[in-house]
Image 1 (cartoon, rainbow, N blue to C red):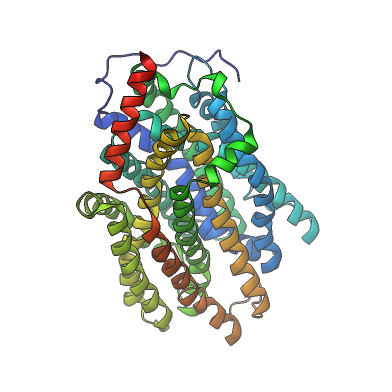
Image 2 (cartoon, helix red, strand yellow):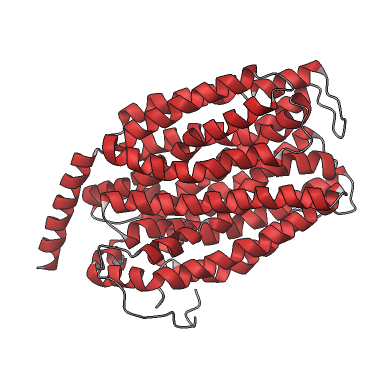
Length: 471
């Protein structure tokens, strides 16, 4: 990696161990672009590919799924390299700095409609999706890893996670709000998505630089106060051996399970909402219901944070996901014309959505400490890589499953009316299918072993070990 970056600000800042409000705000801003781009893809990419680009539903759903084959290599490798490549800016910041602009450009290219046939368009969207995912990983994976490097406090990490994911949701609802405005101003569908994609591309890049310059002094202080955060090259082990260690970590496997199922439920629901709102509920624009879900989820993230402090992360997960199950049941039985009930249920769903965002990510730094206690090494990058991979795989699989269901149910692209079989498939993906996934996540979290008390004991043991190593 290049090492000739402009020197970041080095103004005095609080002592290690407590981050200022502005540092937390800057850290959170780093996920705003990821939230904006991921949300627009989750809600709009499938319907864009079918209605604006003219692809068949199954072909459209396959576009992002193919990209995940590459991501299976891309994400872990970036995590592995970001753990090991050192510059005077540290391990994470150069990746974010160099990847920010390509991240925005490749996202914009995804919303063009080339003058090609079905096959040509398919490969164009596969290529642009893969390139975007590469730069998404280059920026977002090192960024998410900063959680474990900026703080070692159990509750402060939950707070950092809340700031990060609240900013992500702010970007997400920003994309939906822009979509609501753009669709009112521009009549031609292809131009709507082109303008929306361009605006989101620009707005997703700027907060990345705010995060870099706003958090670097604090990260530098943490590294100085905790030299163990800098990897010793003599302790490096082969990549495949690291994967074996990661997947032998029981606590991490539990997080993988709860995150995969809850995120898949979230993405399947998000990708079906445009079809559900348009073809079942008979509402012209799907942006407002989606905006209500995401917008209300921002304050709910801080509610989840408060509940977690009272009853623990597992308890907060049970409460949030349990409430979400009730909402999904209501959406399945909702009838056309019940618009007010739809809006109320969308707002009610936000508590469960916030829980699915916050809790698994707040658990992950604790697992990294457990791994360090067991192995004597810190491997934040590899753990965060697989979580990021699961996030994107959940999005792609959700889109693919919805596309496959629409294809097999007889959905007709660019048609105003759909057959009864297609409407039934849409309702199933709005109710029973995500409910089964949420129930699975609630069962799996019962096996998560790191409580607050266990984590405190882990930190004491790690402090003792580091003290001995320093002597």
